[in-house]
Image (cartoon, rainbow, N blue to C red; front, top):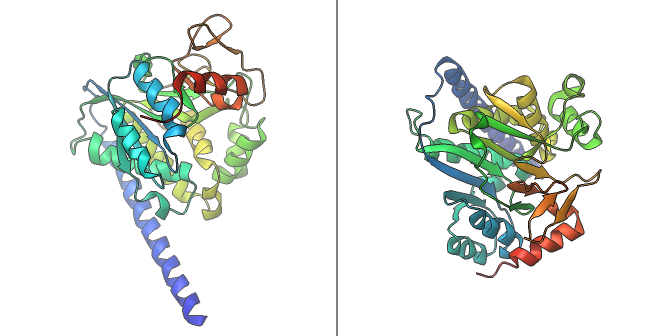
Length: 314
């Protein structure tokens, strides 16, 4: 038993040392970015990136099929961890690149927080060149299982360097017990008091240029590492996402109202969507967002999406 505890203490010491080293590299990168900003993104390519841990084809079918049908002809990358073998084959059939997120299970935090480190690793390793240039113009980070596309997700991407998508009008961080709890865990009571009256932006969809995304992910990962270890098992990525928006940590951001490019279906208010004859989920005035997130909260919307996009056979 004594030997077991000794091994545990050594493992914990190695973990803390690795986290400290990672935090140091992230802070050095942030300092370099502040001193020498990346050049404007002159590329033309677009990239959709998401996490699909433990999902099979059935869970991903609406996301994958609607992405291509909606008009996105660019690249799509899904990070996989714990998926059945048929998931990779399904993605390949539909032109989605599957990347094994080998670090995901090793990070002592929730998958939603851990994905941010995997996104950062992919961005630095495959999207940005060493000199900061890139062939990409925009990158969309998105949830997968509960997202359906109804048009080109990049149709309105040129509005700003980074687009934060708000949840329903009137929902504030302090007025939502869940978001208030996450903010308290991430930034303490002072952070909650600071942003209590701010509107809630959902971390499930975020669109940015590669240079804005780099700043966003560096700040995100830094603040996750600074949070208490127990807090990292919660949804603090959403709290930090909102802090980045409200504190102006990423230059050139725009907060986009719910129901515009993205509709995040509320769980505490009427959603205002109906299934139109063309199969799209439309607002009462006929508008259809290019992205609908958390549609599965409403049984009739979930059924309509399932009828249109089917199960996950190839």
